[in-house]
Image (tube, rainbow, N blue to C red; front, side, top):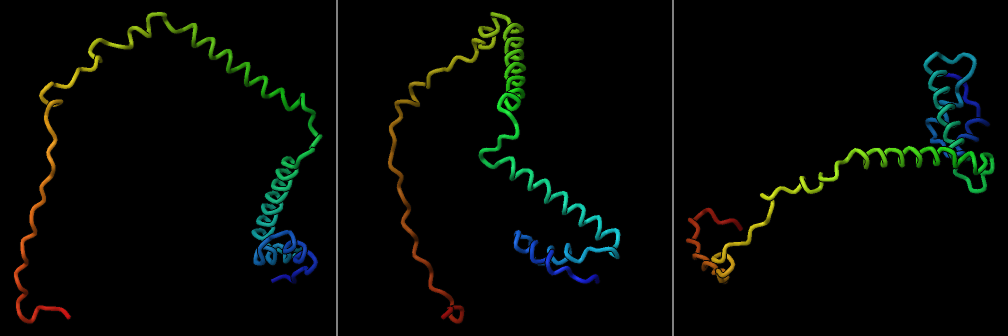
Length: 139
């Protein structure tokens, strides 16, 4: 096991990295194995991408001009409008009338079912339980 770099460990812990992870990352050095170096590189790239994401979300970020940010939105709106126009032109005018067959008409309920009066439910009286056999009572 390599010697832990206390300054790096303290900085990682202060940044919110959990103790076991900070310890492993702070032990990476010249004599580290391939797996340790690979996992450290992966952790570093993940932390770097998270930092970039946080910087993008900060208010007042003027790195990207508003016109450049609006260009992808314009392209999407144009693509959506072209698709809508194409679909509208492809629909036949009589399609709406053909979609509703005559068999779909709703039938009225039979008069007998509608006139049937509702009755109150009757409950059965509970039958008395037979006495328990001697020796089977719990208590």
